[in-house]
Length: 478
Image 1 (cartoon, one colour):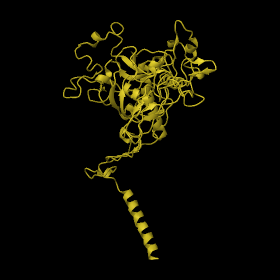
Image 2 (cartoon, rainbow, N blue to C red):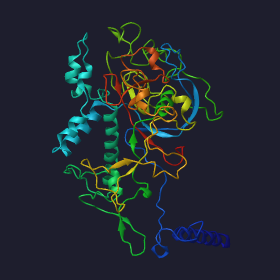
Image 3 (cartoon, one colour):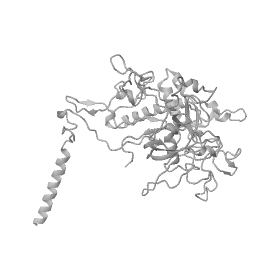
Image 4 (cartoon, rainbow, N blue to C red):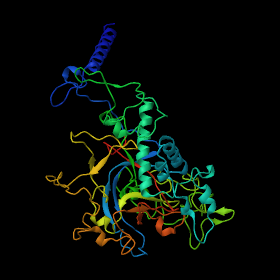
């Protein structure tokens, strides 16, 4: 009997200890001051466990990789020499952005900026890219973007500048969705012009939602409530275009076995094996891993046995094509894809060992004479300007704001003297890298190491895009 009583007594004491410890305020390890307590100044430590995966994204765990082209350099560009680098973890769209995804964007622009139709018109894809002087492609000019039969096909005719604008818009719509989902604001479908939800404007207090449903507790002395801040971990980082290195890393999809920290096989394509044909099942044997052109003019195979399912593009999740080891579809074939990088032939020689990228232009918010951030522009976005060398006088890691030509123009006073686009070269400071083969390419371009470039305000029927998002904190998704 005494043993039974003792057991219950021990359990009661343990429960009391657990409850008591749960009620204690967490303290600073360096000062001993309590967090989330207005009596101790109110410094907050919000609850945070894991970065939310944004809509459409899959997690790409970073690692080391040898970038560059492992195919024979048949065009003798010598611009993709092999280089070992490390790529931090990030998130990437599972598929290319589709016509339907982009139509949602166009609809929103047309609805919100009804008084400024130039914004909507500036976002329209160039459907005339389908025209070819010696090919009949008018059905694609007329129907590809808007007909529901093509809604799940990758959007094309979008320039790099238009793709970047889409990523900015997507950031704000996703964060607005999160704010509505978590009950902080009421969805405002009547927002017009610059009075629309913009993540940065909201965080700076330059945008006020039409109806605030709830706020967070303000622990500062005499505080009551406050709006969401970046420190709360509720809002997501920006959607953006991938760097060239990120895109190539994601395309290969290398994943080591847990026990050896090795990549056992170096692939040429985003799938295992050295050929373009599948042999994984009886039904798919002999069909193609990618949507591309085989040999001379074979875009799809023969009637009754189409080997890649499409003469032009195919749906972004077509059952005829498997995702790679990261779960990404069409990292070879279908459409090529824009990246953030400015093109230079020696990018892999010049870049850093971790997260290489060429295209940095450092900016700062535009402020008035009192140091206050100026009001958002006509689209509701916070205005920026390039930082000046005078502002960076005591900075050691960079002086100039525009570092696009770093290491490439040290002996040239004017970059235009070296790269005169369309005259002496097609390279300039607006030539953007695009990666991956398209429906109109041969097998050579299916390897992720291949590189091409196009001016950022141009578009074609073979280039689309997908978005990425930074992974913050732990590089491993636990």
